[in-house]
Figure: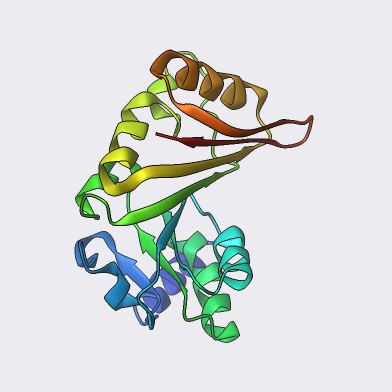
Length: 188
């Protein structure tokens, strides 16, 4: 994708009512950003927003917010969400390591981590979205108990997450070990 196309997408998402920049995140008032006051569910590293939109369609009784730092990725999901008329799907362009700056304690009811970068290189474990440092932030912004769903196709991330769960006393509700998809649901 050319730089010109990216710049055009960045300009266009600024006009989308379903996209928030990190500087304009309505901390503590996210449900005012949606048409209905419903439980708030996050999809972290949402990319083009396929899961955010799919979950919003499946669960109209919840509000879904996809988070990603890449505006040109968010553009696709946000545009489709507007075209589909989904009032319970929106997007936040932000860095996930700063997630606690955008939500009040207890504001989030559930988190989805779908096919996140497993950060396979040595020394990158702290960047994995299931590292204990991230989970502590999720617990801070999440209701208690908080459900965190991991769906991945990386054995490395899957096994790493299982170790984090075991070492920190989290409860696993569902664990599907599959060659193509691993899914772990845990409650704090």
